[in-house]
Structure formats: C-alpha cells, structure tokens
Length: 322
Image 1 (tube, rainbow, N blue to C red):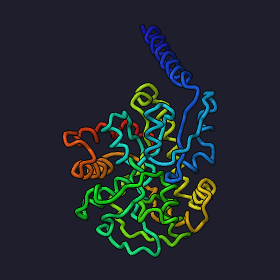
Image 2 (image 1 turned 90 degrees about the vertical axis):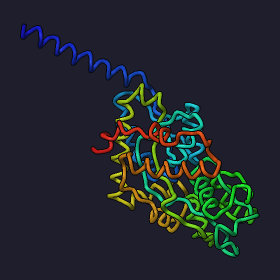
Image 3 (image 1 turned 90 degrees about the horizontal axis):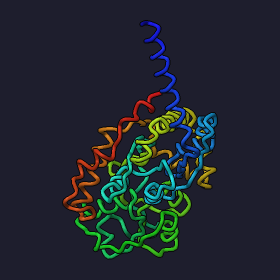
Image 4 (image 1 turned 45 degrees about the vertical axis):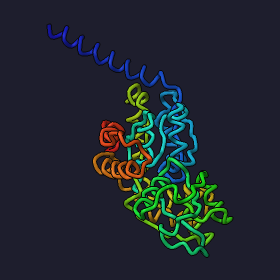
C-alpha cells in the first residue's frame, strides 16, 4: 500500500510539473510597456531582467512604449500588451468604462502631475483658469487632477476650454503660448520647469494617484504563474532602483533624452518604496473616483466602491515580497 501511495504522489507531482510547463509553453511572447513616468520599467528594460528570467522557457519579451495612462489602457484593452503602466485613478476610469483591467502592483507613489503655466503668465490660482485654455491628456492622472482642482475651486469643465493633446504636445503648446495652462506630467513637467521657466501654480500631492502596473483579467486568469514571475522580476528592479539611484537616473536620462537636472527634479518627487497593492491604494483611487463622479465625469449610478475593489487584485502580492 505504501508503495502505491508513493507512486500516486510521484505521478501527481509529475503531472503538476507538466501543467506548469504547458502554462509557460503556451506563451511565446510577453508584451510589456515602458514609460518615462514609470522609472522602474526603464531600469527593468535596460538591464534585460525579464529577458533573463524567461530565456529558459523560450519566451520572448517585447517592449512597447506608453506615452500616457490612456495609451497603456488602450493597448491593454486591444490586447496589444499584457502589462501596462498607469495611474491608479486612470485604471479605475477604464474599469468603469468596461475595460477589464486588473491593477496588480505598485511601481511608484509619485507627485507627477500639477497645473502649469508659462513663466510670464499672470495665472496664479485655479480660479484664474476661468475662460482660459488648458492642454490636457484625457483619461490620465493629469486630466483627473485638473477636473478635481476645478471642482474644488467651484469651476466646471465648461468654465475652461480643454485642448486635448498628448503630454508632449501639451508641453509644446504651453511653450508656444498656444494654451494658457497645461495639466503637466513628469518628466515633461520637470523639463518645462528647468528649461522653460514654467511655473507649477497648483500642486496637491495627495491628489496624484498611485503608479500601478496592470494586466487584463484574461491574462491573470490564464497565466497566473507568468504574472507572478513578471512581478517578482519587477520587484528586483524596484529594489535595485532604490539601492542605486544613480543607475536609475542614468536609465531615465537615456530613455527620456532629457538632462540630469530635469530627471533629478522628477525623481525628487517620486517615491519608489512601495510595491504591494491594497487598501492604501484602494482608498486613494476611490476618492479620485468619487470626485470625478461628483464632477459629472463618471456615471452617477456607477458603484465605485465595488468597481475599485474589482480593479485591485491583491492575489499576486506574494510575488512582490521576495
């Protein structure tokens, strides 16, 4: 009897190993975004850490640049990437709108957005934006930040003219004085400060939502082992970034093609000491959602508490504690 039990146990172990191999084998390529607003992704890419992790499985890694949360979410929804970097509140908006994303990891706690105007502008407060033009990238943290700032100042979206531009074009429009203000995003916002003398006339760090890594419901369900391995490697890169800030800065300078002074300013307001996603992120993201709902940006009947809970997936947190 004992020998029979041992054979059964051995066979179960063999079958389990075979299933793991099949799970990895049915993935030939992992598609991961990189973004200048996600410094950890740049170090991860430069060091080739994911490539090293999956080389033994014959799985290739393809890198796709995200120019903003909106682009990362579009790519995820279209199935063009498997992992995308966004602001937590942007991911919530996507989830409300039917994009089945799952936020699974924290790559930063940034102050990456503020309201910006030119160095000679007379705009000094949010109230001064009434009747003015503001460049903004819809569906991103700067957009959410702007809507909340207007609401707190007693203004509505219709009180200003939104000029919808991607982040880089927003900075250019401000520099050319084509718009009166810009809802900025680092490192472009830092570049505007350092190189153009732009002024951050309204800052509120707590209204910047977390930098989160997302995947899709389908990928998380079908390939949980791959997700865990990606997050474990992400965690290695995050720890390297904290331990060696100069290496992180070099990777960011190289990718963003911006000078040291600009990148230093970005990193000064970027906290990389968090990794696990959970209640703290849930609270911040929900507050942003409620503010957007009150401002009429999100549907009044949306159950934001339930949607936020469905967005945040803590089941992979163990991979972020290696």
